[in-house]
Length: 289
Image 1: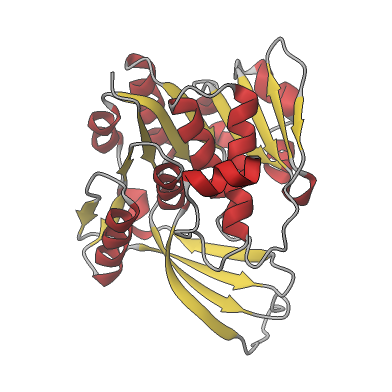
Image 2: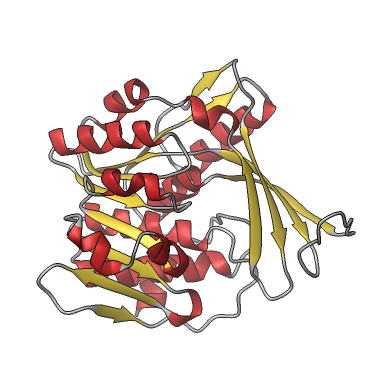
């Protein structure tokens, strides 16, 4: 069987603006234009999986516009296989990102073409996968179809349950692993609630406090955050997810996958934008060592 990672999810054009603080209601702030980047949780995670060393395919939907062409070119440059589908019914998704001086950010996403990705589109893409990775920026029924196809293909399935949506609880029971940050974990009722659904592995990312991994029948695992000076945390969580999936696909155990995911997130956080060519297997190896 192929050891591919197949990512099912969103593809957006990220427009990043540097501001001192979030704007108040009715307020206009002047900011710095920090760039136009390829983004979307799905796309970021697909690029991270490929750059972390896994053969990676991506199933997504973009609009028939310049932004869609730009995203496709970005994927090809990063080594991700698979042409995204195009719809004339909606523009490519856009994320408006406010980047703050301390490296944190706030994001508003307009889904656009992402909402047109269906189960029929993703089922064929999952064939032959070792690992299937999805998020919640595309319709929930599409994610459910991807997870069902993963189970049929005997692939390991991962859901990065972001953005948090309690309507996804039933869907999460279909996943082998669920990755959430602290806020998302609370929204879903905590680690115990997720394990009660039957999820074998629960991963909680905690930013500068590291990451915790929970596996049914085993002691929790804590991985300290790597000591870095963050430049832009946009996409760091996505880098974690992609590199974690890549590690699982290549046979790493749970703890090693957590550590490699953490290293990938640290590398991305030291660069502007949601993904960076500085993320490589060699860079991950060096940071882990």
